[in-house]
View 1 (cartoon, rainbow, N blue to C red):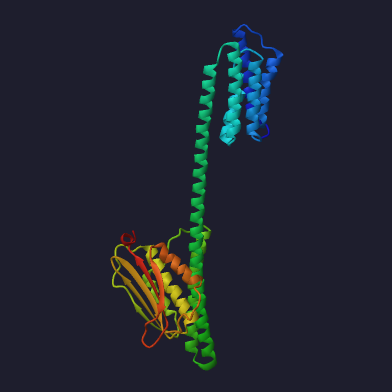
View 2: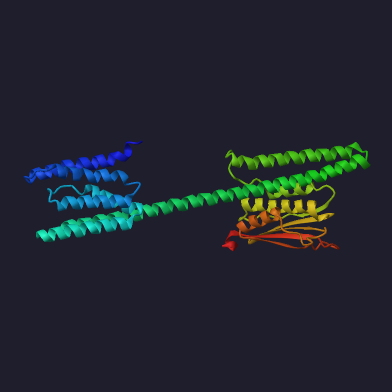
Length: 363
């Protein structure tokens, strides 16, 4: 690895010395020791091209100008300067590159004008070289910007995936623990007040079934983190009655949709399920309700789900992570979530309503 930075200077030194020696031989001139030293000086300066590209360009230009000023035989003596100028431009040292090239061009033009032969072709070649380097620099910047944009997009996708997983874990764990807590409270009450073992066993069986389902849900979500499973929502509308069945001690009513429109997909079904799940979790944990009504309506233009209870209402409570996650899920599909006072008979309570438009309506 340490020899790689020396490969280019050595190759350029070989080209300049051998090429200029052959050119001087054809011209009938002799290549002196001073000329050889100048031909080696430029490649030697290229060793510092990575640490100081601007100074390298200036040094190589000064050496090339000195070679011309000394009147040594023509040849590929400016290869090191050309490479240094290109590398300086590509690396961003534009002022060093253009300034060094301008100084070299001015010096060479002055020398040749003084000698009576202006080097128009050489100056045109120098301008073309710098313009080509500018194009290479612009292409490099575009590639860097494209890679940066792609990396930012991947990071955004990863952040969105983590957010989805965090919402899923919250919904599953919060709902499951709330249901288990309710069932455990019922079991304790039965153990203290009602000696009937059948009711106690039924409650314990509900706790076991609920915890097993929760464990499966958590494993499904965590499998995505291990990349063992694709991110495919598994919750369906037909599973909503199972959520209501877990609400021991609450009177429940479910208005199921009559049919599913053609635009419904897994993402919409999963979102409706999560809205109901989080709403029921809040009812169990905070509402102190005795009744909860769930209604899902599906049409060709939208899906609407509402969960209403007869509990104590919001009472100025702040929006928590669960409801925030519900909003994010629904808004990702172009929908809205509203909270209002429940309109169950003879009660205040709370009503959560989510509207999800069909794709053609959202667009």
